[in-house]
Length: 240
Ligand SMILES: CCCc1ccc(-c2ccc(S(=O)(=O)CCO)cc2)cc1[C@H]1C[C@H]1c1ccccn1
Image 1 (cartoon, rainbow, N blue to C red):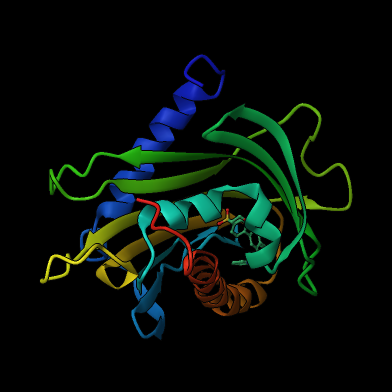
Image 2: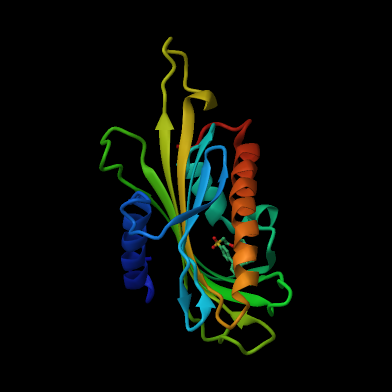
C-alpha cells in the first residue's frame, strides 16, 4: 500500500492518532469529563463546537478478559462482521481494497430524528505496532478510520449529510501465564482497549440531540462490540 496516493496521509494520521490514544486522560489536555462508566469501561468526552456544530471528542478505555488486541482489531476492521455489531449502520460498501490492511468504505447510518440521515466515506487501516514499552510483551494492534473524499461519491449530493470523522481503536494485549506451566488459555489473556473518536456531523443538528445520541450510542456500541468479539472467539484458538 506504500505507493497508494493515500499512503502519506495514512502514515501521518496513524502515528498522530496512536500517540494521542496512548496518552492517559490526564495528559490529554484538560476538559475531559467522565460521562459513562460500566464496570471496566470508562467513557470521557470534551464539549467542543465548530461553527455551532457539536464535535465533542470522545475517549473510551475498557479492559476485556479473554480476548486479544489482534482479535479486537480484526473484528473491528473486517467488513464481513460489521452488520453484526454496528447497530446504527444502514448500508456499508467497500469502495476500494487499497491493500490487505487498508480499505475504503462508504457507510450510511440510520437517521436520528429530527436530524437528517448521515453518510461517511473513510479509509480504514489496521496495523500491528511494536510494544516499545515492554519489549518482550505482546504487540499492540490498532485500527484507524479517517474520512476522505471520493470522486464517485461527492459529499451532500443525495439525501444524506456527509459527516467527517477520525477514529482510533488501540488495543494492548496482557498475558498472565499460568503458574503451573499449563498451556496458555483465554483465562490468561485480557485486552486493554482505547477508543478515540471525533465526529463532525457535517451539517447543523441540535446540540442537545447529538449529545443525547452520543451519550446513548457510544457506551452501547463499545459494550456490544466487545461482547461480539468475546462471543465470536470463545471456542477458537487465541489469535495473538
Ligand atoms: C449525526 C452523527 C451520526 C453518526 C455518524 C457517524 C457515526 C459513526 C461512524 C463510524 C464509526 S467507526 O468507529 O468508524 C465504526 C465503523 O462504523 C463510529 C461512529 C455514528 C453516528 C451516530 C449514529 C450514532 C452513533 C454514535 C456513536 C456510535 C455509534 N453510532
